[in-house]
Image (cartoon, rainbow, N blue to C red; front, side, top):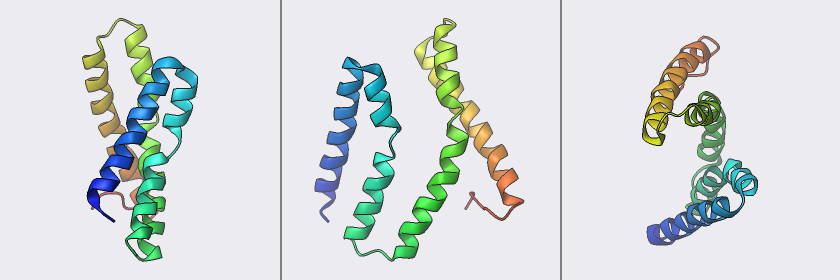
Length: 117
């Protein structure tokens, strides 16, 4: 599939979600929480005749990579509501998420799930 078409469709969806979020917080958050990017990626892989093992692995690892990002969605609003500037809140949340990811990957490695290449 043409890369330009993939960029256009993906960008359109991201912009659409941000426009919806401007008008309706909850609906925008609901749509943003859907695994739209993951589904699009699996569709692109399928349309490019990638093996089903590749698509299955993508879905499997996405599950494990999402888990350590979830606390960020509680930390950002807490920081913002406590007067921390947006840029600092995003930065602190990114560092915290990286730390949670590292801890999660070390714990999962013990049960045979290797997230680090």
